[in-house]
Amino acid sequence: MRIQIWTALIAVLVLRYLQFRSRFHWAISNLVALLRWNLFSYRNLWHWLDRPFDTSAEPSEQLELSLAASWHRGDQPLFKKCHSGENLRVKNL
Image (cartoon, rainbow, N blue to C red):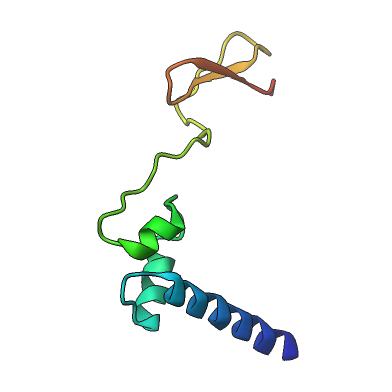
């Protein structure tokens, strides 16, 4: 029970710091809602806090697994295309 209280207090402290640091006049409930909404898109946090409606998401540099990957004969390695168009070798399966 104490851990939950401390975790909630730390979360509120971080949110209040973000609200304080921002130049945009956030209500704490709006800040929480929009942070949760943008949780899985990469944005520069400080730019987004100041201009939340003008900051676009940056493209991810992470590799994504493709369902349309092609197999080559037998135990040959699996290859897939990455965002830049080059072939990447994925583990032998």
